[in-house]
Image (cartoon, rainbow, N blue to C red; front, side, top):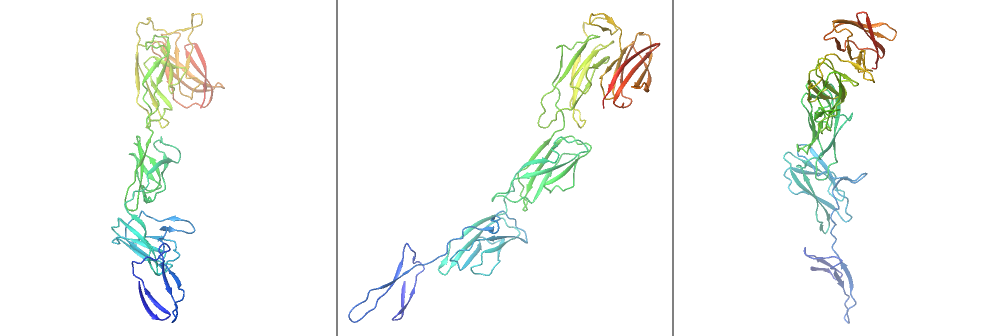
Length: 451
């Protein structure tokens, strides 16, 4: 420290830059009065050097809400972000700098001075990363810098889920379903999602929004045959995040086998067996069947269940000689899965062509018309053994519960039996009578239609 005497009662002190003046290491200036006889006691003055403290944090806003400063930024002409620090008590002004400054510049919001606590950082084309520095300046010097790393290469958050507006991930052709990509809030090391990127199955169309939107409506067009929906976020700088995919359910599981109630697959005329489709649980890309489609050998009839059931009772009629039983699942959309077939045989059975009906005592009784299923929805099968197998034609009538004829037709018989599937028209709900005229003989059976 240099002392420059001004007058007997004043001096000027010139401090070196390296001098330490703090409470931990104080310095003093002392003054004495002198007379011819003696020196007075000294008067002391403690000297300290006050340097402002470092700003605590750089943020976007402090009031009314504390908003964290944007660190994930993108450089293009006109892009800018605001950054603020809180006032430091002893600061007379503030120093704002960019470490590199090649593709980012600073614009002060307030003039230089104690209110210079907020700036705009302007990001230019080619910006990738830089560091913003802020320090408090007092009359004795400048504080350490508070820094904030700014980065244009941060990826956006991962899409965590894709939701369906109708909870429908098993769409049918013709459906329009809304889907939304769900992402977590970005961390300080992630970018905001600027746009979304969707991929969709073949033969689908995005309607009501573009593929840049967080929510899309997807229409399933003719030819759609399953697939997956994928969404991923993209930052304003073009950085793409991790994608999320959802597999759409389309086909039904393929039956692994067809079981038999007897454990055998050999049917004799006049006997019946229950067959059941054995189906595994659906995989992540499959949907459970709503109905089943059966095909059966010639000269057999499905009893006690319709062809939509997973289990059927099959009656083996006259002239049955074996064949193949096949089943496949079908979705609510009408999409049929892969079929499973089971060979049925007719080995070692008694000879004969007549199908007889027996009572509890084992005595043969006269055949009656059989309707399967009953009740039904207006589509059914008729099976009947003629009293006279030489008759080759019968008249079949369908009457409503008032006795009025709803339909009537002639049927050409083969091998003395009727075996016909009726689906000529949709009958209304109610009771009906099926009447078969065989020469002078009339046979009738009651049937219930439920729609």
